[in-house]
Image (cartoon, rainbow, N blue to C red):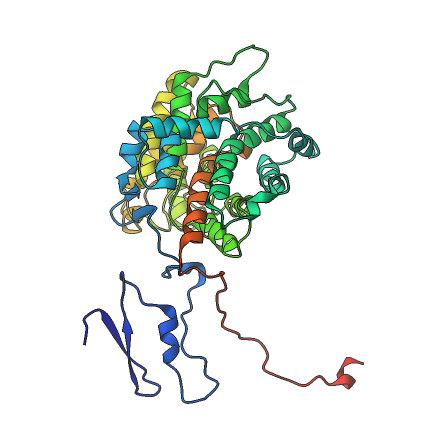
Length: 429
C-alpha cells in the first residue's frame, strides 16, 4: 500500500477505506465511499464552517506560513518586494508570474495609464449618491455599474478580452475611489493626470485643489506604493474567496469584483484598521494602557489589530508598515495615536497572556494611523484596501478560470430541519 494514502476505519460498520493524499490534502469527494448500508446514504462529507481546514482551490499566486510569519508573492518575500518594487511591478508579477523587464513594464504601465479616465456617464452616476454616502458604498456600486459600460467583458473565455478588463479595472479603481472621496467632502472631481505615477496620480485625484499641476510628495507617493504592495493579495481570504465563488458562475469581472469588494466592506475583514483607531482613541493616552490591557484580559474589550486567522506569529506586513509610518510622520507630523500604539504593542508583546495566545500585531494595527496622517477620513480606509487588492482579486479570477478542476461553487449543507411531513389543510384554518 502506498504511504501517500490515508486508511480510515468506520467504527459504525467496521469497514476500512483507503483515501489518496495529494499535496497534503485528501479529496472531499473520496469520502463519499464511506457510507452505511442504507441505499439512500449519500456518503460521508466534511463539516467546516468558515473553511477552517478546507482547501477550495489550488493556487500558484501567494504563499503564507502563518506559524513562521512568512508571506510571499510568486515566491518573492513581501519585504523584498516592498523595498525594491513599485505597486504596478508587483501587480504584473501577480498576474503574469514573473517580474517584468524594462520593456514589459513600460508597456504594462502605458496600458494601465491609458484607461484611468471614467466615462462621463459614470461620473454622472456617482453624483446621484447622497452627499454623505459612504465612499465604500459608492465604490462597490460604481464598479458593478461598469459591467454595463463594457458588455464585452462577458466573453470570459477570450484571454485578450480578460486582459483588457484587467487594464481597465486596475486603472479605474483609483479614479472611482478618489471621486467617491471628493463626492463625500463636496469637492469637484479631479481628473487623472497620466503624466504621474500610479500612486502619484491617485494623490492628485484625491488632493488637487486649484493648482494647474499637482506635484505629489515623494515620501507620500512611495508610502502608498508600499501600502498597496502589502495589500495586493493575501491568499484565500473572505473577499478573494468571494471573487472566485462569483467568478465560478462565469460572471463578468466587474460584477465579481463588486462582490469581492462588498465582502471587504465588512468590519471583520477590510474594516479592521478603522476599529484600531477607535480603540486607540478610546484608550486616550499612554498612561491608560495598563487599565485597557486588564479590561482585555477580563473579556470586557477586544484588542483590535492583534491576532490573525492565519498568522500565529508577527504579521510580516506589520513590520514594514511600522517603518513606513515613521517616514510619513516626518512629512505630516507625528500622529499622537502612534505613541499609544507603540506602547500598547510593547506591553502586549511582553505579556504572557498575549504571548500564550499568539496575539501579534497584524497589518491593520498601523495602516489606519498612516492613512489618517495622510488626511484621509476613516470611511476611506476600506476603499484604500480595495484599490490594490483589485490586482489580487483579478489574478485569482484569472487563475480560477484556467483551472480545469474548477467547478461552480456549490457547497453541501447538513440539513437539520423538519423531516418529510404531509400538509394538513385543517391545521391551516
